[in-house]
Amino acid sequence: MSLSLSVPPYPKGIIPDVSFKYIDMDDLNKSAHIAIVRRSTFNDVSKTFDGFGGVREDALIRDGKLRNIPGLSMNLLGGKFEVSHIDFIQKAPASAYWEEGEEISFRQYIECIQYKGGSIPIYFFLSDIHKIHLPYTRKADKVTNKYLAQFEATPPVSNNERYELEGFTIVSHKPNKLNYWHVELDAFDGINPAAPVVKPKSPKKGVDKKSTSHKTQIMLELKELLTTKAMKTLSDCASVPENTYKALP
Image: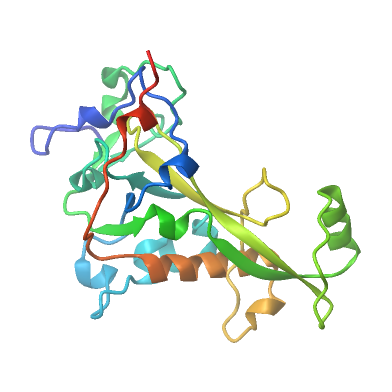
């Protein structure tokens, strides 16, 4: 769906510039009140937040399913990205990742923009969702032992013969062709640092969390973190320092 005269012009200021570099999110996280925004799956405030201002799971995560959490799409505020810019959706191939030093021609991707007016923002602080520990257990069997040995990890065994482990969250800078300020949220199991947790299955109702797979446990912890830390309004938003995203000449 292309843009027309009936919608606002695309905010070209958020398009990656050749002078930009990847943002080191660990370094950025040293600053207080760095804010992130995600677009609700609904264009309705009452469907997005409950009467107490808490976010509804299916507004934050598509269908409320755990499988839709890995690589959760968000946008970094405090730079050139404004909250109103969540109304613009980059479709393939504009949604492909931008490479450092790549020069972007807006004309090439003008047909890859969808406008969704009236989008509802959901806010987070980077410090609330980046590098946060996610506890989980894993059965102490041969399969797990082999996996742990591969990465030289030797966690203690609990009384019920399960390993007590800790995963963690990572917010990564993932600029796309038309949005430099795009970031993604993933979870890692704390053992393999290079492979995020993918394809978790939602548990059946009434099933004890610790009896589910490690992927499910990690994603349940992450879902709880997200719903707890999500904000309806943003009281403060720090600026992203220019030297964080602009390469030195």
